[in-house]
Image: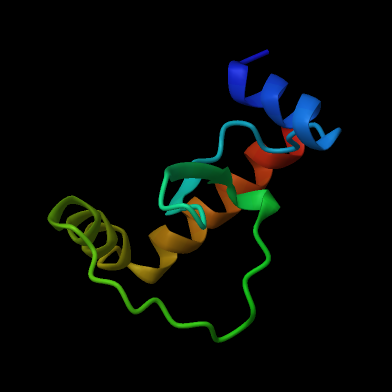
Length: 86
């Protein structure tokens, strides 16, 4: 079990259901950089992202979204299959 999994089980008494998914990087109220598992976030529908992406993140987003729609659907379906296996 990875350290992050142990921490969230200890701190919140909740095991991570998707430990291989990336975390959201943000700042806590004191300004310290933290990483939060996506499954712990509650994001209201329609919430806008107002910050500017860094160059690497922008490049990754463009590369993911420029794929042919059929290929993107295959990627989504493969992700669901992987998730159901874990």
